[in-house]
Length: 160
Image 1: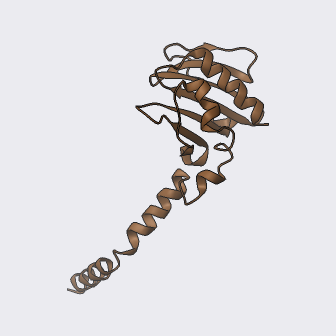
Image 2 (image 1 turned 60 degrees about the vertical axis):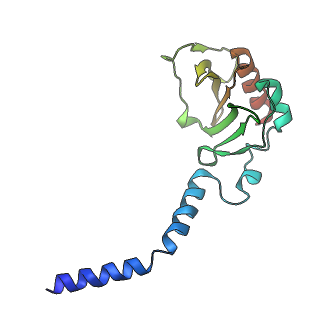
């Protein structure tokens, strides 16, 4: 009997508190995605390039950068249609080498373990540079391996 009374009271108390849960959940989600208010403007990766500078790689006009990858990346989406350019800078311990993926090839002379690979309708290139793993991707119909490598080189030059 005491268990039933306690369970009923607990249920009533929890149902009365439901207004705070969505706000807390949204705050947590924003913190995890890096999309807290003004976070994109504060993300140093989003400051590396303007949309206009990246259009040379995407071949299409781009929107302003937004946070991605829990704030370890910035994504510029195309203004019309589908596609994007993304730059990710993470600790080197998170480096990936997708050597079994279609189109993978090593690219010597770009950081440590530089590579280029087909990825999600476009191309990606990545390398370890000191304590950082830097990866760029261009997902757009005009994407090429040459453009992905060029964007990686420029990103490495700007991120020192």
